[in-house]
Length: 218
Image 1 (tube, rainbow, N blue to C red):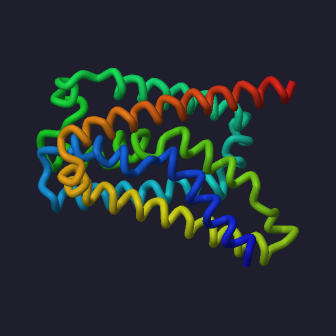
Image 2 (image 1 turned 90 degrees about the vertical axis):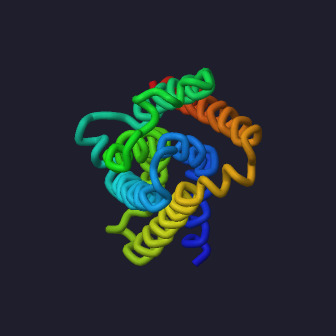
């Protein structure tokens, strides 16, 4: 039972700062600024469901997929860190008029719905960083052939942790307009920049960990 509780909180606590639902919720709100509240809720639901499937596959089969393609986890961390660092820097360095561009803001409900998976689900919400962490969590799972009961309980607890993080994302995205009203314009701008800076730092940290792991493996 203790292992199941540990697996649940480890999954949630490890993914939460990388997914950063509160920070990315404001970015999501800006990307869907011209959408109705109903459509925004639909997109938030699609993001949560897609994210759960993406991370679930990464945890349960990610290491096997990497092995099939001959990839190592450190290389995934480095690649993911580079992508996240670039995304964080662009968000941090963007001007006030950058959010009005056609690339970042959808002008119609259908346009926003079409972007529900890419780029909103991946890489904005559940990007390479989240996938790399999910794969790392999956490598620590007990072997189901050696201890079926323990492995099954831990897998269920891990899936519940994923469900909790995806539920947090849904609530943050669906009610991002409420968060913006509470924060105000200045507070929203500050949180956006802070979220971008955190994303940049996470990317650099992932690169550092990946490089360190590669050097130690030689």
